[in-house]
Length: 235
Image (cartoon, rainbow, N blue to C red):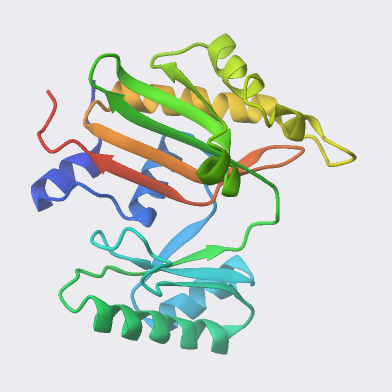
Protein backbone atom coordinates (compact mmCIF):
# COMPACT_ATOMS: atom_id res chain seq x y z
CA UNK A 1 0.00 0.00 0.00
CA UNK A 2 1.42 3.36 -1.09
CA UNK A 3 1.45 5.91 1.70
CA UNK A 4 -0.12 9.30 0.94
CA UNK A 5 2.44 12.00 0.11
CA UNK A 6 0.31 14.45 2.13
CA UNK A 7 0.48 12.29 5.27
CA UNK A 8 4.21 11.67 4.78
CA UNK A 9 4.83 15.43 4.53
CA UNK A 10 2.78 16.15 7.66
CA UNK A 11 4.80 13.56 9.58
CA UNK A 12 8.00 15.34 8.54
CA UNK A 13 6.55 18.62 9.81
CA UNK A 14 5.44 17.02 13.08
CA UNK A 15 1.78 17.89 12.46
CA UNK A 16 -1.32 15.80 13.19
CA UNK A 17 -4.08 18.10 11.87
CA UNK A 18 -4.58 18.85 8.20
CA UNK A 19 -5.94 22.27 7.31
CA UNK A 20 -9.29 22.39 5.55
CA UNK A 21 -7.49 23.12 2.28
CA UNK A 22 -5.14 20.14 2.74
CA UNK A 23 -8.04 17.87 3.74
CA UNK A 24 -10.03 18.80 0.64
CA UNK A 25 -7.02 18.32 -1.62
CA UNK A 26 -6.40 14.87 -0.11
CA UNK A 27 -10.05 13.83 -0.47
CA UNK A 28 -10.30 15.12 -4.03
CA UNK A 29 -7.38 12.86 -4.95
CA UNK A 30 -9.42 9.99 -3.47
CA UNK A 31 -12.27 10.75 -5.87
CA UNK A 32 -14.56 12.43 -3.35
CA UNK A 33 -16.47 15.46 -4.70
CA UNK A 34 -15.33 18.58 -2.86
CA UNK A 35 -16.06 22.21 -3.61
CA UNK A 36 -13.34 24.04 -5.53
CA UNK A 37 -10.91 25.61 -3.05
CA UNK A 38 -7.68 27.55 -3.63
CA UNK A 39 -5.09 28.77 -1.13
CA UNK A 40 -4.34 32.50 -1.31
CA UNK A 41 -1.27 33.92 0.39
CA UNK A 42 -1.96 37.57 -0.46
CA UNK A 43 -5.07 39.74 -0.94
CA UNK A 44 -4.19 39.97 -4.64
CA UNK A 45 -4.21 36.16 -4.98
CA UNK A 46 -7.55 35.97 -3.16
CA UNK A 47 -9.09 38.45 -5.61
CA UNK A 48 -7.60 36.60 -8.59
CA UNK A 49 -8.96 33.23 -7.44
CA UNK A 50 -12.41 34.72 -6.73
CA UNK A 51 -12.53 36.17 -10.23
CA UNK A 52 -11.55 32.84 -11.80
CA UNK A 53 -14.13 30.91 -9.73
CA UNK A 54 -16.84 33.48 -10.02
CA UNK A 55 -18.46 35.27 -7.09
CA UNK A 56 -19.89 34.92 -4.53
CA UNK A 57 -17.05 33.24 -2.63
CA UNK A 58 -16.14 32.37 0.95
CA UNK A 59 -12.79 33.06 2.63
CA UNK A 60 -11.49 30.94 5.52
CA UNK A 61 -8.27 31.08 7.53
CA UNK A 62 -5.85 28.26 6.69
CA UNK A 63 -3.88 27.26 9.78
CA UNK A 64 -3.14 23.80 11.22
CA UNK A 65 -3.45 25.33 14.69
CA UNK A 66 -6.90 26.89 14.24
CA UNK A 67 -9.53 24.16 14.04
CA UNK A 68 -12.62 26.25 14.85
CA UNK A 69 -12.32 28.86 12.13
CA UNK A 70 -15.63 30.63 12.76
CA UNK A 71 -14.99 31.07 16.49
CA UNK A 72 -11.68 32.78 15.73
CA UNK A 73 -13.23 35.25 13.28
CA UNK A 74 -11.51 33.43 10.45
CA UNK A 75 -14.48 33.07 8.08
CA UNK A 76 -16.21 35.48 5.70
CA UNK A 77 -19.11 34.36 3.49
CA UNK A 78 -20.93 35.52 0.37
CA UNK A 79 -18.30 37.99 -0.84
CA UNK A 80 -19.62 39.54 -4.05
CA UNK A 81 -16.77 41.57 -5.56
CA UNK A 82 -13.03 42.25 -5.52
CA UNK A 83 -13.18 44.99 -2.90
CA UNK A 84 -15.15 42.76 -0.50
CA UNK A 85 -12.68 39.89 -1.04
CA UNK A 86 -9.67 42.17 -0.50
CA UNK A 87 -11.14 43.68 2.68
CA UNK A 88 -12.19 40.26 4.03
CA UNK A 89 -8.69 38.83 3.51
CA UNK A 90 -7.13 41.65 5.54
CA UNK A 91 -9.79 41.49 8.27
CA UNK A 92 -9.30 37.73 8.67
CA UNK A 93 -5.50 37.96 8.82
CA UNK A 94 -5.49 40.94 11.21
CA UNK A 95 -8.08 39.39 13.53
CA UNK A 96 -6.47 35.95 13.67
CA UNK A 97 -2.96 37.32 14.17
CA UNK A 98 -4.18 39.36 17.13
CA UNK A 99 -6.02 36.44 18.69
CA UNK A 100 -3.39 33.79 17.86
CA UNK A 101 -0.10 35.71 17.52
CA UNK A 102 2.04 32.57 17.53
CA UNK A 103 -0.13 30.48 15.17
CA UNK A 104 1.35 29.20 11.92
CA UNK A 105 -0.79 30.65 9.12
CA UNK A 106 -0.57 29.29 5.59
CA UNK A 107 -2.89 31.90 4.11
CA UNK A 108 -6.61 32.09 3.40
CA UNK A 109 -8.60 29.52 1.45
CA UNK A 110 -10.94 30.83 -1.23
CA UNK A 111 -13.92 28.71 -2.16
CA UNK A 112 -16.98 29.15 -4.32
CA UNK A 113 -20.23 29.55 -2.39
CA UNK A 114 -22.19 26.38 -3.02
CA UNK A 115 -25.84 26.47 -3.96
CA UNK A 116 -28.14 25.44 -1.08
CA UNK A 117 -28.80 21.72 -0.64
CA UNK A 118 -29.74 19.19 2.03
CA UNK A 119 -26.94 19.03 4.60
CA UNK A 120 -25.59 15.63 5.61
CA UNK A 121 -22.47 14.49 7.45
CA UNK A 122 -20.08 11.57 7.00
CA UNK A 123 -17.45 11.01 9.66
CA UNK A 124 -15.06 8.36 10.93
CA UNK A 125 -13.35 7.53 14.20
CA UNK A 126 -11.42 4.68 15.80
CA UNK A 127 -13.19 2.46 18.32
CA UNK A 128 -10.83 0.76 20.82
CA UNK A 129 -12.62 -2.57 20.35
CA UNK A 130 -13.87 -2.56 16.75
CA UNK A 131 -11.34 -0.31 15.01
CA UNK A 132 -12.40 2.21 12.34
CA UNK A 133 -16.12 3.04 12.27
CA UNK A 134 -18.05 5.30 9.91
CA UNK A 135 -21.02 7.54 10.68
CA UNK A 136 -23.74 9.05 8.49
CA UNK A 137 -26.48 11.51 9.42
CA UNK A 138 -28.24 14.74 8.62
CA UNK A 139 -25.88 17.69 9.01
CA UNK A 140 -26.10 21.01 10.82
CA UNK A 141 -28.50 21.23 13.77
CA UNK A 142 -29.76 17.66 13.21
CA UNK A 143 -26.43 16.05 14.10
CA UNK A 144 -25.64 18.52 16.91
CA UNK A 145 -29.01 18.49 18.65
CA UNK A 146 -30.93 15.39 17.54
CA UNK A 147 -27.93 13.03 17.14
CA UNK A 148 -29.74 11.39 14.22
CA UNK A 149 -26.88 9.24 12.95
CA UNK A 150 -26.08 5.66 11.97
CA UNK A 151 -22.82 3.70 12.32
CA UNK A 152 -21.04 0.80 10.63
CA UNK A 153 -17.68 -0.91 11.11
CA UNK A 154 -15.19 -0.37 8.27
CA UNK A 155 -14.88 -1.93 5.72
CA UNK A 156 -18.44 -1.96 4.43
CA UNK A 157 -20.19 -2.81 1.18
CA UNK A 158 -22.76 -1.01 -0.95
CA UNK A 159 -25.67 -2.66 0.88
CA UNK A 160 -24.28 -1.51 4.25
CA UNK A 161 -23.82 2.06 3.00
CA UNK A 162 -27.37 2.21 1.68
CA UNK A 163 -28.75 0.81 4.94
CA UNK A 164 -26.87 3.51 6.87
CA UNK A 165 -28.72 6.17 4.89
CA UNK A 166 -32.11 4.50 5.11
CA UNK A 167 -32.08 3.86 8.86
CA UNK A 168 -31.70 7.44 10.12
CA UNK A 169 -34.94 9.02 11.37
CA UNK A 170 -34.53 11.88 8.91
CA UNK A 171 -34.49 9.60 5.86
CA UNK A 172 -37.90 10.90 4.66
CA UNK A 173 -36.27 14.34 4.28
CA UNK A 174 -33.79 12.82 1.83
CA UNK A 175 -36.60 11.18 -0.13
CA UNK A 176 -38.41 14.47 -0.65
CA UNK A 177 -40.69 15.41 2.24
CA UNK A 178 -43.74 17.66 1.66
CA UNK A 179 -42.70 18.79 -1.79
CA UNK A 180 -39.01 19.19 -0.95
CA UNK A 181 -36.75 17.86 -3.69
CA UNK A 182 -35.37 14.35 -3.14
CA UNK A 183 -31.60 13.93 -3.07
CA UNK A 184 -29.20 11.69 -4.98
CA UNK A 185 -29.03 8.63 -2.68
CA UNK A 186 -26.58 6.73 -4.98
CA UNK A 187 -24.17 9.71 -4.83
CA UNK A 188 -24.27 9.68 -1.01
CA UNK A 189 -23.80 5.91 -0.99
CA UNK A 190 -20.70 6.28 -3.17
CA UNK A 191 -19.22 8.95 -0.87
CA UNK A 192 -19.66 6.63 2.16
CA UNK A 193 -17.94 3.78 0.28
CA UNK A 194 -15.05 6.02 -0.81
CA UNK A 195 -14.51 7.29 2.73
CA UNK A 196 -14.48 3.67 3.91
CA UNK A 197 -11.75 2.90 1.37
CA UNK A 198 -9.78 5.99 2.39
CA UNK A 199 -9.73 4.74 5.99
CA UNK A 200 -8.71 1.24 4.90
CA UNK A 201 -5.86 2.54 2.76
CA UNK A 202 -4.68 5.16 5.26
CA UNK A 203 -4.58 3.61 8.76
CA UNK A 204 -2.71 6.69 10.01
CA UNK A 205 -5.95 8.69 9.86
CA UNK A 206 -7.50 8.89 13.32
CA UNK A 207 -10.56 11.01 12.49
CA UNK A 208 -12.12 12.24 9.28
CA UNK A 209 -15.21 14.41 8.91
CA UNK A 210 -17.11 15.90 5.98
CA UNK A 211 -19.61 18.39 7.39
CA UNK A 212 -21.56 19.57 5.66
CA UNK A 213 -21.96 17.59 2.48
CA UNK A 214 -24.61 19.31 0.37
CA UNK A 215 -26.85 16.73 -1.28
CA UNK A 216 -28.74 17.67 -4.43
CA UNK A 217 -31.25 16.05 -6.78
CA UNK A 218 -28.21 15.12 -8.84
CA UNK A 219 -24.87 14.71 -7.07
CA UNK A 220 -23.44 15.82 -3.73
CA UNK A 221 -20.59 18.11 -2.72
CA UNK A 222 -18.43 18.28 0.43
CA UNK A 223 -18.13 21.91 1.53
CA UNK A 224 -16.00 21.47 4.66
CA UNK A 225 -13.55 18.75 5.65
CA UNK A 226 -11.34 17.85 8.62
CA UNK A 227 -8.69 15.14 8.98
CA UNK A 228 -6.67 14.28 12.11
CA UNK A 229 -3.82 11.76 12.17
CA UNK A 230 -2.80 9.23 14.80
CA UNK A 231 -0.12 10.49 17.18
CA UNK A 232 2.19 7.63 16.27
CA UNK A 233 2.93 6.47 12.75
CA UNK A 234 1.02 3.33 11.73
CA UNK A 235 2.99 0.77 9.79
